[in-house]
Length: 543
Image (cartoon, rainbow, N blue to C red; front, side, top):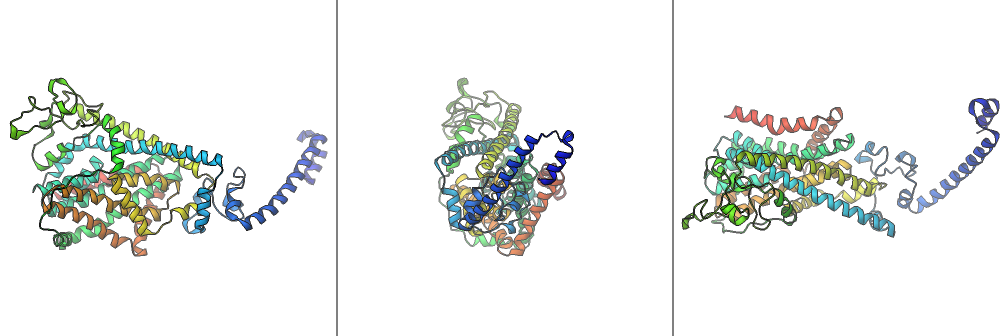
């Protein structure tokens, strides 16, 4: 201040400051200096009593770095948020977590309510977009996937076919249920079914890898999100790398599950999760895929999709009864006289025929409809992902990383149980991992927590195959479903309990995440090469 005063008096024509303005400036600087000293002494007392309160009550418009905080804690939204490593995050108590979560005034509770409603809104349409994406993929790739699954092949080809079929229809649950049905119908042997479900395990992770690209606008978020998505890929690939040759040599999955089989299996009823019941009514109004086409081609009931075209509705009335009701061949009913005919797009008993259903449509028309819905679903997926991330960022702004880490850092076995439970509810591991991927991108869930959640999702997705086996009365179908379950359990036993083994998929995922810093093209190139180019090369070499 003294130097500034001297310079101003000597060179007033350069600085353009009058003596009156200088006096005003001096007064304000002195007042500010007094306030700073008083504030510092007050804060030191407050922080000694309650460090969490002192952190959350600071003026975040001024402090945006952990280096400026006496406690050294990083807050969500800080400039150096991305620089903090997991081992640098301090430990918080559950009391601090409860206080940060539940102690708010009326205005803050109002903001939380609005934010929660916004998050639920975007989450619902995010799930809707995933459902529409799956239906679109089944319409576009259903005929090819059914043709791939129909052949009795060697182990390598079976592995690749399972992966390609799952990547094409964007659902390992659908693929495994079809494989179980094929084994139940004696169209595929149990040994071939084991290799097919191994491939399906690899293909299921393509969806959340696509979702991670929705955070390309922020380099740091993309790095974390892509690492969170690919840790699923790497775990599945590593499990296959060990268990696939082991199964070829010893057939341990076959013999293990054979010893567990009952004498017979009673017919059961199919079960769908509550999330599917909430989302499906809206998606079925846009597009509903006909899974029977894929199964019929895979089991050899029909030679190609052309058998289902052109689409025929009785009397030109587009509803389930006149278009999609099945003929009773034992009663002598004929297509076009007593019942209609649908192709890859079908109608629903409750919601009727979807918007993209057309009487008289051919295979080309349905493929165009599937392509349009695919583009629409990807656009909606990105929009909802951006909205969800924005709402979460606003809600977590200013929250200490110690609090966030404590709230999300649960025991690995508990995290697996959570992942399994969520996947059983939504009936799709792709949905579970796709919903969690944005949280990893934001830094809310650490990569070390994403891994056990992913492993739990792998266990949960096997329930779909077990349910499909329960509907069939064939013991072999149940054996393949059990092989899927024990394949995932074996992978967990190999790669998770021992810390040095656990670090392998984590380090691999982090390396892939860091690669996105060099180029934003890494995720799409990775998807094309890993899920399509390499499998097609292996399929060609194994034929």
